[in-house]
Image (cartoon, rainbow, N blue to C red; front, top):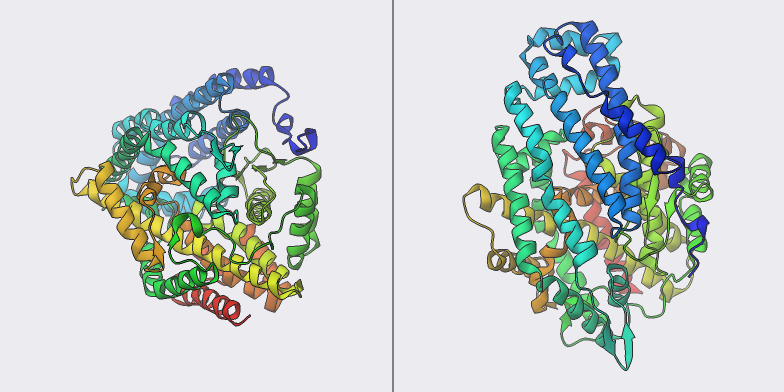
Length: 585
């Protein structure tokens, strides 16, 4: 496997070395005193100066964080960058503490004053921030209470860090023997094995993988329980009805969108059951187990290709987005925005990251699978969304809400699969691609909604005073799993522990956004393919909108209204149509 410099991200674009990082760190440390503004934010000029100075410091800290975070993820076993990351997180906490007086002071102002600030041309970069502050009046505490909560965040953030250490450094992922051969096991290789046509290999990998989690299940359970209690504590402290209410309110999303998602998925579960039954039939299995559901229905049709070839394929698939988008894709490749291959200690999975004063970056752990080809498209969707927003919006509005973060990435995946289906003439390969589309929707829409239901159960339990135990979580998760997948799937005993290996659970109520993301993406992609330039123009306007308004409103720019039933119905129609076409081939 090639691992030369061109497959490593250009972290030197941020800082040349740790010495440069240290210089900026020491400079920023001296800029964290905002006491001169305390009690003066009722004066428009003081407010403007305060916002300008905090923006300058925030941008500097974000850049410091990006470097430390990326270097840490290159090798999670390297304590040097672990230390840098901890230090910059302490600066974040100090900044939050030092500026915690802002929201209480502003919410204490008369509503007419806040509205005048919102409409003032000199504060236009912050109008949406001020609108959110006005809307949050009921959830803002006294200055001392807000400061206490801010200081507590450093300690209470440790649950996520603990799980990350368990999952990436301490998890005993041991190699296993099968047919006289030793197979290495990692998060990346596990995904490869589950797609392998050798059923016994899949079974062996599945059981070995879950054995690692069950060996640490008590500490993982205690860590997750602590994380949920943290969420509930903050929601109650801020006077929200629930942790879910707090999460969606903080993103300016109506709670009805979350509830409608789960309700609509429940209604569509017979479609998923039908698909699982078809998969079982195609695989010719008397019993289909959890380690069988990722194997391709169509054998020997994998998009198995080198990374550079995969990247070129992604560029072709995204051609409907136009030449400007293609130029950005090539720029990212040539200027080393991506860190491509798996390495010892490297963080698992894939993500896109970036800050206002840097181009975006992408972490991959590329394997030669169809999934990893689509991961390129997915993560570049994130990065180009970030690029457009940062280019088009002032700093205060550039960071788009997490709610819309999965839209651009999934639009790319949908466009790529549509391109491949259109170009493919071979019936076998076409059937494989249809199955891939079905799997995309199963894993991104149905599976993530299942996760969302589990999160809602976990938080609701704690809110009712019911403790979360290994037994209670496993029992509920197994029940939920059976409900979603139906009678065609025989649930392996290990699957009840699946909740224990989901990193996103440590960012509460995140996963449902994958589901609303693909629902939105399916509508946007269809519009781009049918309407062309007008739809692309609207889509680019959405990509450039940052957080200039609420995310549900911003999606309307691209033609998606999640307050209606239409996008949900469209998504399940795509699934139903693909399943019908698959069965007809």
